[in-house]
Image (tube, rainbow, N blue to C red):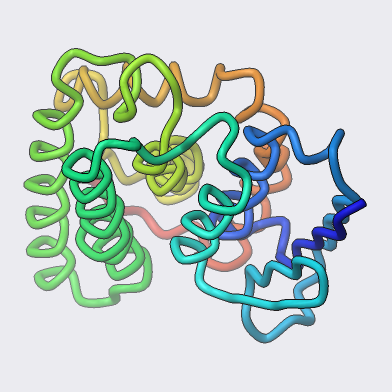
Length: 212
């Protein structure tokens, strides 16, 4: 029996990424899977597999996919795999990175520039969906998992802040993906309670009013 332990924080979309990948692999039935959501860890998520530890959620996702090849989250074709890695990194650096900056930016003019940059990222993502249900096609894959903050957490942030960055009028394709993502049966198991997440962000952001 393999030992698999995930150390994370219940609020963290990065921790929840790894939990989602593990559940897509059905490891709960095949190993000693232990989830520990505790904010005392300085760096989350951390995956412990048979005594070996690793950090950084995207790195962990690739490790999970190579270690447990069933229900792949990365394409097997080398080119498609490279592109999935590219888009996961694009989401991590350009989209998520930009959103975090917007959330904590105090300067209104600078925030406006950041919002415009984020909007261009979302336009690019809409084009990449290419009419598919998920970025991975008909099944959730690496890119969808990397975009989990956009799929769920962003909606809560918008409710708390009053920010109207991603709306159905502006980004109908992306919003349709968000609906599909949060309704996926395995994804549902890994999403923190919306009311608790709302309270957490309200306490951290101070309920600012951003209208974009």
